[in-house]
Length: 145
Image (cartoon, rainbow, N blue to C red):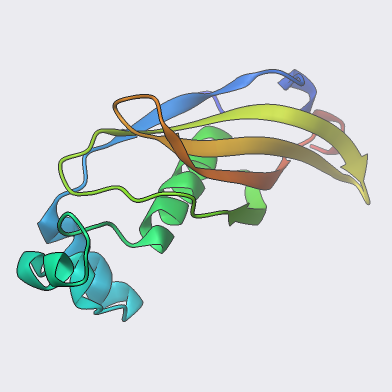
């Protein structure tokens, strides 16, 4: 079993273990089915090109979901993802190697919860950051267990 962090163990500046994703067009079709976002730029290459894009692109919200997975994988089943947000500042496409990263920026006790704020982002294989974001996780507090 993986050791998941307690609030007391986390320090500002700690890095979250990176999460690598290699999205495919098939994944985009599956995501469209789950999200209800069937805009053709996400699965029809000819249509995407006709709109001026270089080809099929990922759903912005899929990149956001990858960031959610990054934080959830790090905090484990005892943690609670309280907030997650991001900005879409660029496109990614099937075949890109995407790495989700994060760093702890602040921690605090609030109403008995051990809260940890993180800066998170997605970058592609060239190191370009295109989905910067933020997250707040509630981690278990030893004193409360």
